[in-house]
Image (tube, rainbow, N blue to C red; front, side, top):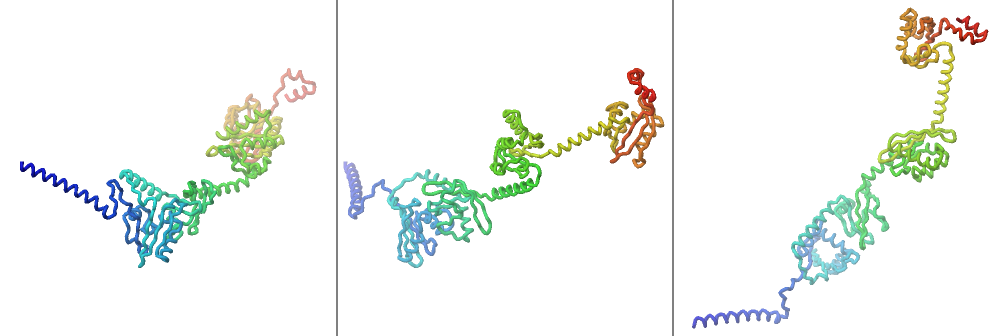
Length: 523
């Protein structure tokens, strides 16, 4: 019984002690004037304070060190100054005022979305400078962040920052006044190269782009008497614009080489008497030479306006510089045929113009679907060919009128020409060389001395002059032959019947008295 009473007394004493301790804990804040902290209350946000001595960090709060560690670049002062210059119009003013008055406060720039920030600078003497960054909106905010979400955001930020800083293009952001508010590592390197390694904010504009510039614009940078080209892609945003400057040196060199090549071709084609017109894959005129104007009469202004192939041919038709078709449908069909054949392979067409001129039009395919047309005036060539054919026809008529069978061989023994009597005597197309006819003559003369003399004459040097002889012909009639040397090593062989062939009696009966007496005397 006594033991139970003792235990009960001990439990009651312990309970009273706990209650007294709780009362004392609640009473102490009340007595000191400090409000009691709620079990769910968040700790106060640590201020961002940094202490520099001659621009070297001496001390900093935990939040300030976290900010400096997250900033890109080298050196605490440089990293902080870049960050401040992106959010304050001119932080140098705060430093100068603090040096003069001992303390200065600078508000953030509303144009840069940092109007709630304040920069407090205090000169503490002996080269010490105290900087505090204050954001009233977050001064008493208690924010709970999920650690996994924060880690994911930090990883993504690290990837984005590394990608942007290692990008082989210049990237920067400008506000509406044209002030550079942010730039990547490539841009900063270019600034360092131009400013001998000293970078100050606000950063200079390496490329001056007007406010009304298009989305893509080519610009250049002059560095150490070396010109570098960039294709600037502009991305507009709210109260800013972001510029991506892609190096375009290779493209500029390629375009310059192409222009020089085209100029060289143009100068070369300018001296050609053949008209040239090159159409691209869209069938627009890209290149032409002066000869095209001279041959076709097309105006220079019309050609420089890059007309299409159909428009060019229509203009030629109006100038009567193309063959006149029967109707318009056949004209369109001929144009389609001309384009198709020129694009698929070599196309040659002769145009007989109404004015008496003759043009040869050649179409050839070019790379990437382009086609080229060559216009050549062949009027004189056609006239010469016609005269040559007329002379050949006249020569053939003269040879056919001769009373001798004639054959002409070149220096290599190839048969060049024969007349009608030769073909009637020895046959047409029986041989094409002197060797072949030697065999025919040998068989006809049965290898007689007359044939041997003819063969020796054909083998002799042309300086010996004409040589004559006789041999038996294909009908065993006696033939007299003569070999005459010609220019260029050619030789002419003539055969004449030594005894004219007798005229049949039926033919003499049909003749008149005079013709009959001549035929009988000849027989």
